[in-house]
Length: 131
Image 1 (cartoon, rainbow, N blue to C red):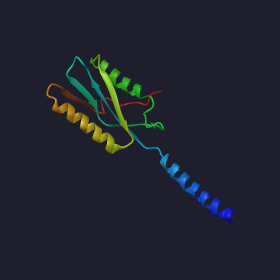
Image 2 (cartoon, rainbow, N blue to C red):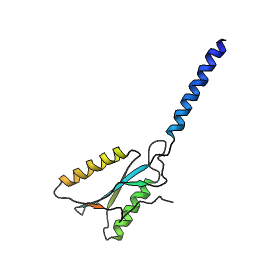
Image 3 (cartoon, rainbow, N blue to C red):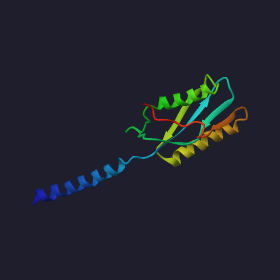
Image 4 (cartoon, one colour):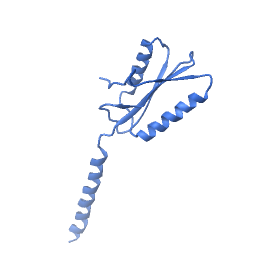
């Protein structure tokens, strides 16, 4: 009887906890936007918030191959004649958090009168999943 009193609750607890783990592993969308600045130019480029296709954050919450996404933005701007730029990518699996970060960053650059803030439209540039 003692065995049943100990093992049965343990089995029930294991089932409950494993069901939460299964729910947590759902594929959440990953949202990102890129920013490009230069030390010799007063123009700051920023992409719109985009949903990254078929991407899943690591267990530590990082975007795999994030340097490749920054390189995509850098290559796009170099093809447009904008060289020597530093590109960064911001990402999150929460639309609310990434929108808040985007607004905070864009407000910061828009307040600075010595910097021109240019938005890159989705039709002009779209992040692609790196191979």
